[in-house]
Image 1: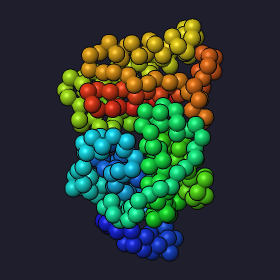
Image 2: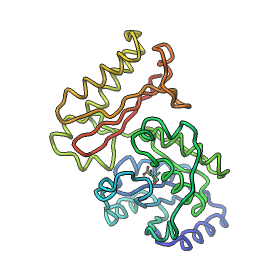
Image 3: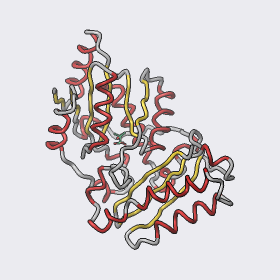
Image 4: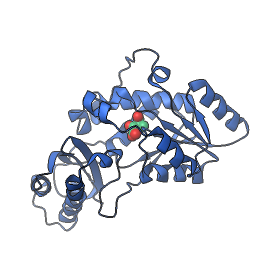
Length: 283
Ligand code: PAF
């Protein structure tokens, strides 16, 4: 497995692979890799001749400096995990390499980046879009793999890819869960034992909401939302930031329980200062 810290190295390597007719699958990450990342790498390996994984904690997508400071950085362990997963090359640039100058680009995604995560993490998706655009220009992959756990991020990246005209197929991959239903996340390692015990309430609340909608038991969207929020907030360890039931493409809130059958439930919850997100399609 090749490890590149600069743009020139990885670009030349990709060029050589392409010259030999190899397809490139790409998995962008911020490191602290867990089983869900490795699943993305495995899938990319099954569908492409070579796999590039990037590891870069992207400062411009953090709206909270404390969150950036506490984000786990585990490069050596990450490289060890990747080398056993069929990854061909890793790109792990420093901040100066990715952003030699201050980045001023501003995307207009309409309401896509204003609702839910966008509302509570101002500028977050602009920072994600800038980083992924830059990585696509460096790696020039045929396919790029993203987890559906970050559902809104996936929609924003699809929009950015279209706007920039990147010839990349965006491949959404199902959320990977722990046995008790908690969605895998790099942030889970920061949960205290008590918070970790309570965190599966998030997925259970999503399942209950889906059940209420699909069985026609819900009288209104507000009722489904209130039930989910109070179920989670009953735990002293957890506090819901938002729970929205939205159209899968526009991400606008659905207005009635009939439309909710094809919607997605999206949620953000604080466990202490650890922010967890999850979602569940209701169809
Ligand atoms: O999902 C992530 O890990 C990041 O948002 C991404 C896509 C690597 C961009 O920094």
